[in-house]
Length: 77
Image 1 (cartoon, rainbow, N blue to C red):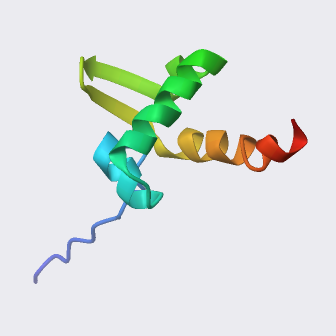
Image 2: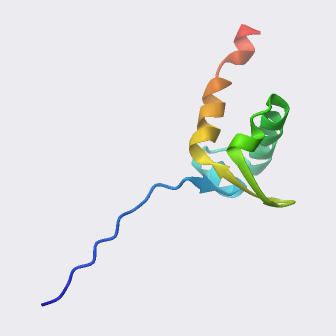
């Protein structure tokens, strides 16, 4: 009798800058600019885990929430 192994695919929680760029269809430089804007807004530490000077892990859901919070803000200013 052969045992069947089932794998559960887990959603990705964190991604690199290049992964975030692919997911949200933007350049890496745009992602870096958004991260800098997060730093200015004070929400950077909740979204990003720094592993080195140029290596960060970004929470995908929180990054998306940040983008949604900035959606059309320039029209309301």
